[in-house]
Length: 79
Length: 191
Image (cartoon, rainbow over all chains, first blue to last red; front, side, top):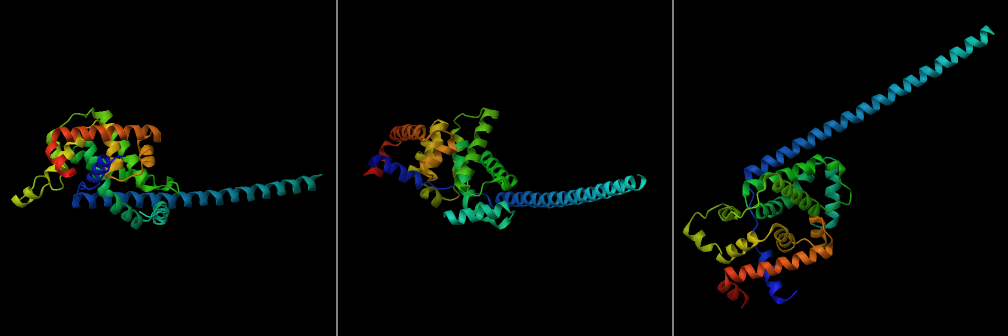
């Protein structure tokens, strides 16, 4: 990079940035917050659903074990 | 932005912390908007694309990697959205009138503001706007937004070597364009 390029980059770095419109900015922020809130609610629901699913599975497994034990006891008594 | 703070903000954002989002927004929104305004050469389009960039960040926040570097990530999304916009609208014509929209408050309001507006800067903006998009984005990302060339290469989706060549061509075109348009001012600035 030569002096000319350095000067060019100095000029580019000092260019003014575009000032965002305050109203538009707060609108965007609010929209993003609401998306984040919806995402958080969805996460809680997913977690709750998966926990509920786990309980259901555990219940079904316990029932199966109980029935198998009953069946084997019945077979033992008959024979 | 310091790396430690950046990592912390990403982690908080992934956890859904809105204050982390506000911090990131306050740090990058103006830069993203400036970049998009200079790329699109139209302020309202740039505002829409910037909004979409932020929505992408929050809707995919939990998919962010813990070591995500926010600057390059945001500029990549903004740039890709701009490319998609151009593809869908085929809007790559040079509208000189749109250049005025680059100025923060549109047209200056008073004679003082008119005098304060740096004529040389106007020529620089016009020269940037006249570059083909691939060279314009290279120059904007490194020259204006101060991204490292390696990061800017990732943003553009090309190899660092290709990016170096692109940047070098952009510099040459920019210098030529400035020399053509503002020979007097350019010489005065350089001296």
